[in-house]
Length: 286
Image (cartoon, rainbow, N blue to C red; front, top):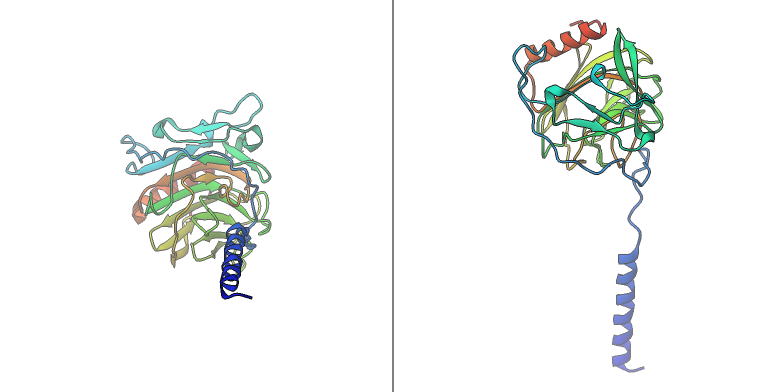
């Protein structure tokens, strides 16, 4: 066998090997989260800037990126909610264009107020607010909600923007440890937040910075400066789930959600907690 033939054979084998490597399927997704369907729920929308509310508003007026109140929700004739907005933050919406994704609006659900009810199977809304660190390094998220279940599995998220890297998201998860079924993603994994009971209304305050996470439930500190390392995330905040990579649909009611594009002072945070607690009949104890 000639030397030239050997060299040509080796080169041909190298080309074939490289071609197979290029055609190899990507590695499987992490099995620690529930894999979502391939079809995304909505196309990303242009994020909207935060606004300053008029004086006299019951919450701090500076830096409001989103404020949705179920009392203001306008469902269709079938009770389903296609678009959710608030005139105070007019350019911001939460929407679902497919009927199966749309939650329903239930009147007199929480202390005489309406709630948006997610079915835990299909419902999820996408907003034109981006809470990823690149867009919003600091954020404070308030929510008034309940869950129809306290089961930590299957995974369920009240909100999130997770692309599979444990991005900013909060909800039920079996990896919280210490009996804490309600959890938060820190970029490093899952941290237990508090023990959520089924059908019990909660007021939570979630504080995100570039490097840590702090949280309060019904006015009480639950987590303080837990180390976090969030990276690139989905460009939209999802409500009733965690996004297009891992859906993790919520099963329960959401009465109000507020997002600030900054860290609030303790006095400001307590102002929001007291407003929400009084409105929805939740005891705020400190």
